[in-house]
Length: 565
Ligand code: ARG
Image (cartoon, rainbow, N blue to C red; front, side, top):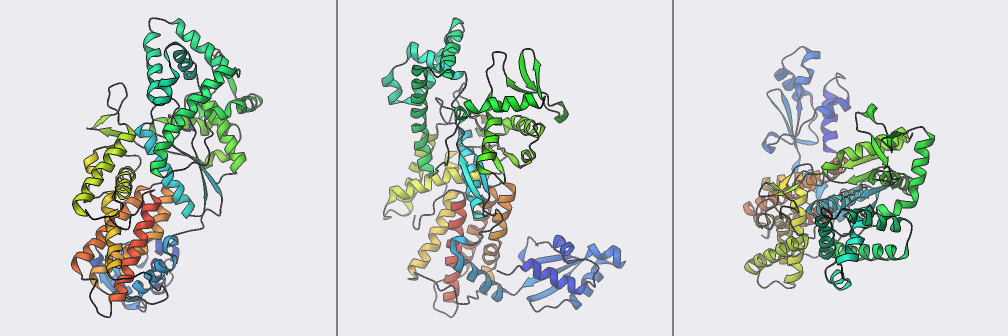
């Protein structure tokens, strides 16, 4: 596809007699919100100072000088020069590009094949996966897909919370009250139950804490029974997590969690010592971060135990060595911002410039009825139940709209699960949002099912027309005014992908998909597509392109696009 903004800039440049260079012009060019005002606008007032003339006059004079070969027309409106693209030429250009490249439309080579580890999901063993972990999972997955489309090699890492003193408590609790049966039947809930009971009983019975410490010590020393239990708890928990991952269609490249770094922390501590960065503070070992306006990083406790950040330091170094990353991303809730600032600061102090390539990708909370979710208050959302309910709602709507549909259950799964994922991703990641299932699964409005439905509608038009393949080599000039917004949006897909990648923001794609679906549905409502005239083929090419791009946008969000629903 031609770069139309560049064409506009060139035309302006040729007319301004060197008062601005092309780059400066590009920066100034705007896209009017209302397409009636044209497709691009150059604000002539940026020349007012140098030319010492009224902006309106400059705009007028520019219009007279501008070569209009590439445009339908160029007009002065107030202080603006408005450019209208040649619709037929644009249509031919964009449709050819989409139909030739199909799902590769919008691919880029920005990443040069460099690897990007993405730390995502990372739930804690023996606890239920929270909505926060779900957010991390779907945001991380979408960012991975976006990075891949831009030529990076994403590495999806599930940094499981599988180490720490809580495992000592869990083992002591299991020893006292646990049963193998129970754990096998319902691992997460039974393990959580033991853990909760431990915390209730240790109020009366503080020696439980010492016993838990002993168990953790046994685990750290590689004691056989402790290790067996740890492995078993980890395995059972992972099985439960995996059922969720499977439904979301998400796979990880690595499950190296916190425990993986046990034998890799001595090196961290040694380097910190060698560089004179470790200080003693009340018996504990810390790195002072006052220069960064941060609290000190606690590296080792009084009893010599390492901490979350010690393991993250080892993990960061391991990832640099293993992947020689271009960037290293951590998709983790906003509430851990300080932790990642500390992590980056300590690495910087250690002399690693690549600390600058580490990016924490924070996100906001999911609330319900405006309130924070919390296990203690009983305001919890159980992930599997959310997915099941969403699928049931989707099924109801499919029954009502399309009772004859084949493979209803599979489509309902794709729509229900897709709805939850889409809803999560359409919100800017830093915003908190409220979870209301009915809202999430609606077939109208700004929802996943709406976008999926629009894609299915495009596919159904093609089926009705009996189109199986469209020759991308032909020129398809759709000149219908009603189709213009859709055509323009198709052309914007590549830059939209680039923006989503640069901002690590899947919502850019979700919003784009809604916008394109709306534009397409408006076109469909105002213009007849399946009439036999000389534009029929061109219109079908447009419909096929919309289907391709909607499908690809949904794929980048990790959402399926059924052909029929
Ligand atoms: N397990 C942690 C939690 O649930 C998240 C881990 C994030 N990743 C990391 N490398 N620190 O809060």
